[in-house]
Amino acid sequence: MIPTGPQQRFKLGERVRVTQFVRVGHRAWTTQVEGVVELEGMRPVGGMEMGGKAAASHQSTLRLRTVNDEVTVVALDENTKVETLDAAGVR
Image 1: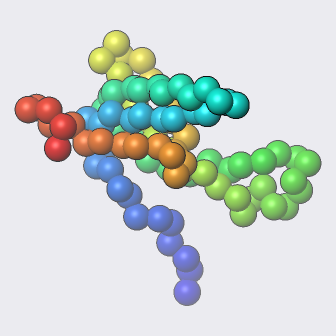
Image 2 (image 1 turned 60 degrees about the vertical axis):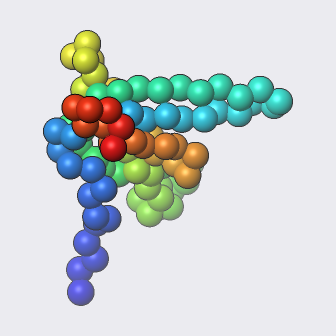
Image 3 (image 1 turned 45 degrees about the vertical axis):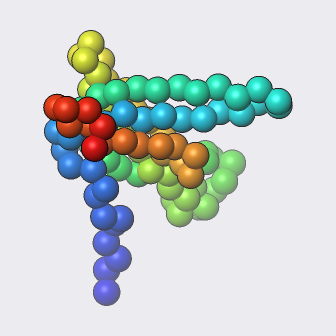
């Protein structure tokens, strides 16, 4: 059987807010971006120094188009919070 990729969690064209928490030492920062989902995918993690292991290690990503018509790609991890937004606010 040929393995299939992970199931899509977000619909294309869906408006979302992504909140990430970054901790450095005793300080913590929060970053947020809102936009429309253009693509949900996986990217390889690692580089040439990992050899063949880089092909097996992947990280989830979300490509968003912001209200300023900018495109950003967000790497998703266990500390990332993704909220689906609708016309009336957060769903």
